[in-house]
Length: 585
Image (cartoon, rainbow, N blue to C red; front, side, top):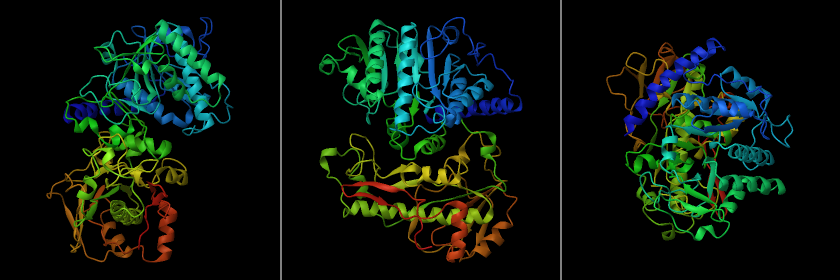
């Protein structure tokens, strides 16, 4: 199952790398097999929809009366490129991207993408280019534009797949939708567990809030009426969130008391719309895919169609980093995969005497009702904080070594004992199938958004843990360009957090004597400046180069590796508990 999914994506990714390289060689390159020849959005004689898009453009882009739509501003330009890349890899030409500012409009035209100037009703153009910020007034205004767009397309008689820009499309979803010919609307969900198994629709439209980041809508009298009322509701109440308004509308007329039909559909919106909830294993949210990894655990042989970057803690940079970690990100230019003289990775360790069973007892298959909310004195919480801090200290020392050598650190995987949630909990997001301990996304423990702001862009001092496995990486690690660096063995009572790296002992090795001072590391590993990849087998209590406060200051200024580097665990009823990145250097 894994090979069929990732091997295929790897080959497609290589094709994309070739296409991307050619696009940057010449902005005029055009691929008629992948892109519609009607990319101009400057048609005015055929009339426009209220959202500003030309009716003629829409009809030319649509295939089988179906169109795929997303939108963004220039702040999300790499997300737009990621979306375009996935559409092209899936050979889906009937997509269109609404540009909310001139900069993105120009960029999309340069890429040969069907686009139009969407603008934003009621939003000042001086602010429309920035990060909307989840839950902010700009975020809600942008959402209103989205709903007007849905209304316009349904009234034009088109079936439409609406997608947020932070959705990664991994398979063509249209064949799945056609399996439900009587469905008026199929919507994704924030539900955290799969109730029906396999690829069936989820159990009930009202069981959990629908997430409107992925919506398949057929143009029917019912959906036309629903979208018109949806626009009316949000325009009459500036504080109404578009997603809340939708969830309220779907339940009108006591719809939640209804029953599913044989296909898993229910009557919603006073019986006028036949609706289904997309399965979370196939149309995943950020928790079921990135945290629980349900698509691997259920062993159903099914591969996700899409993953939406929700349930994360690092803002826009956190979304991007999660996609990179999971190898579902296609928004990087070739320069992202280059760094002179090379990269440094290491094997993370955990204490060998740590009782992991104390975490296992809190996770699935135990029930939410079996546990009480954690308190600051809970032993599992103290064990979790110690486990994460132990790994953070290793990352700080590895980051310092990489800085000394002028290399870019490849961040490790992190083992977490407890889940992260935005409210008090017992160790697992309630309602999920999460098993503990688990491999947690980096934004659970590192303040990625804060580091991104300090770096003033995407020049983070580290790469994602999957970087060396990315099929877009030119000259990946092999026996000719990688050296294992082994500090002299200490009796530390530690074990690898995720086992031994896949690389074998046949790779070249270099033994380092302890202690690893700044001068010694710089001299010995500097001799390997022509080797692209160095992998440290252990950094626990090995590096002493940060003992001098002056050296710490220079390191911190260059890498942002101070106390704010680590994030916080949330939370008990008394609030967050902050991780310790600095430790006793």
